Image 1 (cartoon, rainbow, N blue to C red):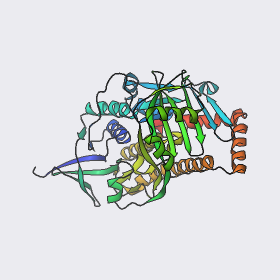
Image 2 (image 1 turned 90 degrees about the vertical axis):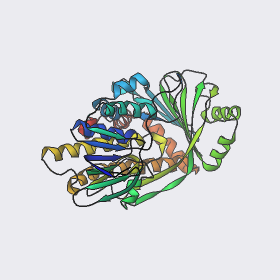
Image 3 (image 1 turned 135 degrees about the vertical axis):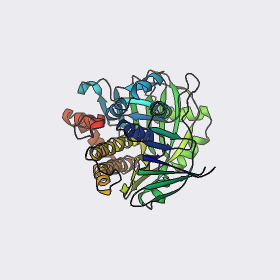
Image 4 (image 1 turned 30 degrees about the vertical axis):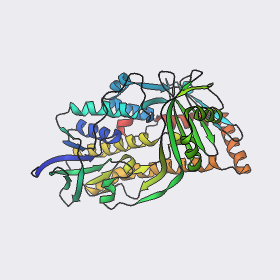
Amino acid sequence: MPSQSTSFDVVIVGGGMVGAAMAAACHGQGYSVAVIDGQPPQREWPAGEVDLRVSALSRASQRILERLGAWQRIEQLGASPYREMQVWDALGGAGIHFDSADLGQPDLGHIVENRVMRLALWEQLEQSANVELLCPAAIEALSIDQHVARASLADGRELTAKLLIGADGSRSFVRETLGIETGGWAYDQRAIVANVEVGHWHRETAWQRFLPTGPLAFLPLADGRCSIVWSAENQRADELMAMDDAAFMLALEEAFQQRLGPILSVGPRAEFPLQMQHALRYVQPRAALIGDAAHAIHPLAGQGVNLGLLDVAALTDVLAQVRAKGRDIGNLAALRRYERARRGENLIMLNAMDLFKRLFSNRTLPLVAARNLGLAVTEHIGPLKRLFISQALGLDNSLPPLAR
């Protein structure tokens, strides 16, 4: 195909949930946008089938998706609210219970299939005159100079943009090509995901038990089933993935203490490795990283997509300020405002989840006693619990406008 050049205000590499949300936000500000992705969203699936990959979306994330025009469609396709959360330690048994009613809120969040969120956002983008979806498309080369960012595609097209945004996941081609290094480490764990039918109603409650080999979460689905995320040390993960369904269900019942009765059935299982990874920089002239391209986190609190959507909200806020002043959106000084707004906040969350992972996997008796005492004390101090739950919901006014 002959080479051709197309100019945009913003080129986004990666059209997953976070990249698509960023495109919708840029469209809302009147920017011309191109989204490059390797595969289109899944558009249909059998009735009653639930994706293995789900996200626990916070209230702040819900607000962002409402303002981007995607939330109503997400609800139509299927979103399962959870109104309570039960967390307890396998060693010692202490636990903590969160209830949305304590804050006068209808719920603590929603469990949403990743494919549902992506499809709802893509349907919004497909209706946008100033958004071009280049999919399937492969990016072969990137270059940035003082005036423009260039992206060369495998089919010969060349795109230019005032701003290039990398939203292409933890193995980001954009990040690596720009030479942005990362810090972090791989955990000795893999997350096993599956959908299970349980004997008792889940009570619209998210459940999590901290086992010495890793946390086990049961997330409520609208049809009464639960989506499980079982983070297990590699050796234990090997054992669990090698089991037939009957043996896996027995292991799951034992690990979960049959809090929801017997496991009646289990669907297909999948697994993925866990890591903590953080880009040392989020921006450089004419380029910015968002979502997993900037940070990857342990899934024990389900914060990955929520952090990515807050990146979107913060970068959107910066772009709005730049546009209002008639300035260049690729200006490094402006992009650094986004980096300052998000890198520190994300680092706090990454370190907190890393600390929780290490704290609850430690079998040392004094540490077991200390963490159980901490859970017990927090459970009985109402203001402290309300502070935790308020922060998790995203009810504070320090969030970017798109998330408030």
